[in-house]
Length: 340
Ligand SMILES: NC(=O)c1ccc[n+]([C@@H]2O[C@H](COP(=O)([O-])OP(=O)(O)OC[C@H]3O[C@@H](n4cnc5c(N)ncnc54)[C@H](O)[C@@H]3O)[C@@H](O)[C@H]2O)c1
Image (cartoon, rainbow, N blue to C red; front, side, top):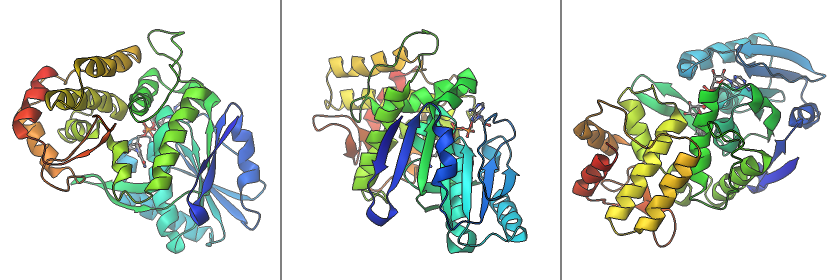
């Protein structure tokens, strides 16, 4: 078991990573909480227990659960059950559950405490940590949300054993990202089809995310590096190609960011090859899905809500991964061709 601290002073919290970490949940519930609401999905074969009054709320098993309607529904259930600001929410699931439950925690009674119990690889290395919570609108992903930090995060690596392989691979897309933001041990290649991200790998990724969040909680600047590979990933997702899971789209986006950086002379051929090496070792896609028009993708880049000065991207370079503004459109278009 490893303990990583997200060092945010009064909003700081522990992240427990390892086998049997679920056993710790009961003792992480604050003593003055009388009630506990477990927000989860029926498909998730893991749960947690406490010695408090418990209410279990199931949400839809898909991205469609990230909606204001679901937020209202959960808040009403909490109100009917008499939840107060002293009580606690437990989010047990992947990024969909932790994003929705976290947002409910941010707004119910103007803020209640919540604990994330992450059960997907993507949730453990990314979504459950850092306090970004929110839901989607028909107009786009994550357009309504709040920064609201959990009081603790539990990442029981045993829960990953029941993840569908596609979901596991999606998590590996985010793991691949961390290889370019810090130091991550090689994932075990016990199964060449689906390498295992063990406790050491998951903990290394969490440590990188915790350090970035501690340095820039509300994405003033540095936190944007966590969006490495996400400019193209979001465009692929928005273009309607949800046949790629988020982490798979991020993998294609990392290959793209490396191609752009190489064309701009920010990284050499060797560093470009290192990107493809990591992505292919994890069995991740590096090519654009068929039928995606470059013009449409380029137009979507401009709508990316992280754009602050023309076409902004997170790119590797001599100073490591950083935000680069005013990236030349011709370079962006040419790099797309490299992914065909
Ligand atoms: N807040 C953030 O910082 C942040 C960061 C990255 C991604 N996200 C969000 O996370 C979401 C994606 O999260 P995800 O990839 O975890 O997907 P997900 O939450 O949709 O979970 C994937 C599927 O796995 C199932 N599942 C979960 N745990 C399981 C387990 N242990 N065994 C068997 N099945 C299990 C779920 O029911 C679901 O069907 C997106 O909405 C994305 O926007 C948020």
